[in-house]
Length: 144
Image (cartoon, rainbow, N blue to C red; front, top):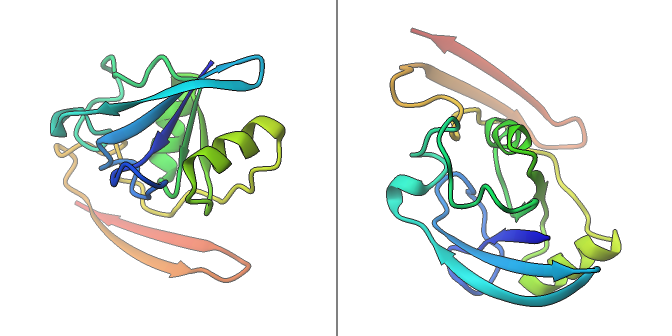
C-alpha cells in the first residue's frame, strides 16, 4: 500500500493539495511503514494544472493525506479509487501512523470547487460565503 502526504515544505503536512508539488510517499506493508520517498511534481503535474482524465504520478497511491483540499479534488481522487483524507495533524509520521491505527481525526473538504474540477476553459466567477462554525456551510454562485 502507498500513502501520499502533501508536504510543500518537505517537513510537515501542508494545505492546498491542488497546488502542492511535493509529496512524501509512504510504503506500507501489513500496517507498518517500510519507508518514505519524496516525490516532486512539475508545475504542470499539480492537481490544479493537470487533467483528471489523464494519468497522474500519484495514481498508484491508495490514500492521500493533506491539511486541506476542495470537494472537486476529493471527487477526482475518489474517481481513481484514492482515499482523500484531510487532517489538522501536521506531523507526517504521526498522521500516517494514526491513519494506520484508525485514530486520525479527519476534517471536511473545503468549499472551493476549482481544484482540478473546473479547468481554465471554464470561465466561472465564484463568490464564496463561508461559515466555519459547527454548521459548515458554503454557497457558490456562478455566472458566465
